Structures are given as structure tokens and as C-alpha cells.
Amino acid sequence: MPCNFSVLHLRTIMLFTAILLLASNLFAADPPDRPIVWVDVCEGELAEYANVVEDLGKARVVYLGERHTLQRHHDTQAKVIADLAQGGASLVVALEPLETSQQPSIDRFNRGEVDFDGMAAAINWTKRWPSHEQYRHVLEAARKAKAPVIGLSPSPDVIRAVARSGGIDRLDVKLRKLLPAEMDFKDPVYEKLLAAQLMVHIAASPQRLRPMIEAQIARDEAMSAALADYLRSEAGRGRKAVVVCGSGHIAYGLGTPQRVRRRLGDQNDRIVVLAECGDVRLSAEEKDAARPVEITHDQLRQIGRPVADYLEIVCPSAK
Image 1: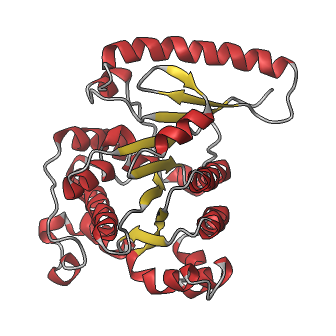
Image 2: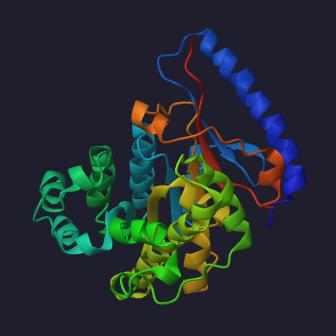
């Protein structure tokens, strides 16, 4: 059933107050591991992990939104893949960090001809995605589940060209052909959110912002097209997709999910956001390339929908 956003906001405040109190009590005993809390955002209640997995099993597409460099996010993704497969689901695992042009090498991994390291070497993954090693458990879980792995992303060179050329209409014709023919860039809610988020980049300016927004949407369109094409194919028939990607591509159901729905005509999905919980540490280079940006609750409430179906929260470290 649809979430009531006003009621949800109040209930979520109360819920997170309870979580903080729970965390304080847990830390008093100095537990060896940080407690994990699952939240059903639509219900505004704590959720048992087993119930979350049971509900995810009802969806055709499950999105697991990550912060790319947090290993615990990838460990959770591997666990969800394993548990969905244990429940009898026939899966395909789709990764943002893998490109559609790399699929021949990925398929060698799918057929068991190469292991994780062999595939990574074949696609020069170390250079193209420096934190690729953190996805080892995800791909190993996919292999154990007999789930094929597919790449979702277009060439990063094409996406950069969208931003640098001044937008999709100014993109070189040859590069434009590498993106889906049908793309929708008129998305006021998503555009407004991206306009606020992308200003974190020190290079962002009012003049450069629109091309940056179109670059993000072009990536979402390309990823959704790759996923929809697979699920409509004979290979994808009867399979449930587990999508591993950055949370920014799936939050609020915007970005990639609503574009997959448009292509498949199917609303049967679940969105999981794995919370950062203060664990992200920016490098000096990343700090130099960023500016502080505040996005208020008033701005986010205008989106009119919850950020996800479920959140995984890890309680703060004891001081």
C-alpha cells in the first residue's frame, strides 16, 4: 500500500529515537560487533531480517543501494543474494561497476572458465573500478547461487562526454548511438534532487549543472535498458534480478527503478538502501573536489515518497 509521507516522517523520527536508545544500551555492554538494525520504511517499524528477505523474494527486481567503497555493504549484498537463492529464487545479479561492453569476459566467469581474478584481469577492472576487490564476495555468492552476472553500465567515457559536451543534444553522433535510443530527460522531481546533490562537486556551477544532470540520467537510462533487455530475453525468463548499484541511482524509486518500470511495465520491485552511518571517509583528493552542501528535510519532503522500502542501519561505533 502507498506510504503516507507525513505520517511516515513523524513515525520515522520516533523510530530512530528508539534505535538510538537501543544502541546506547547495547554499547554499555561493549559488544564485539556493531549491531545491525533493519527498518521497514513504509511501515515505520523495525523489521526482522528474515521477514525482509521473505518480502524481497516476492519482487521481480531487488535493488541493493550501496556506498561503493564500504565493504560491509558488499557483505550484506552477498548475504541477501545467498539467502534469496536459498529460498528457491532463480537469480540474475546485475552490477553497476561492470560495463555492458565487458559482458563477453563476464560470461566466461559465468561459465566457470575463469575465476574472479581472471575476469578482473580480462576487463582491467583494477583501473576501471579501483575498489573492485570489494565485490569478490558478491560475485562468489552469485556463482554459488548459479546466478549469471551481467554488467549494467555504459562506457564511462560516454557519460563523461555528455557532461563535458554540454548535454545530450550536443553529444557526438557516434557516442550517442552507444546510449539507448529512447531516453526521458523530463523528470522534474529527479532533476530537482540531482540539482541539489550535484552541487557537492566543486566543478559544478549553474551553467554546468544541466549537462551534469543529463549525464546522470543517461547512466540511469542505460542501466535500466540493459536490465530490462536481459529480463525480457530468453535467458532472463523466470529470473529475479538483484541489482547492485550506488544508492543515488535508486533512492526514492527515482533514477534507475522508475526507468526499469517504464520499460517493463512492471511495478513489482523492492528498494533497499544500505545506510552509511558515518563510516565514509573521504580522501584528501575527494575533499578537495567537494564543497559542503546542505539538503534540508523540507526539500526531501517535497519528493513525496519514502527513500526506500527497507534500510539497513549499523549502529555507531562505541567511543
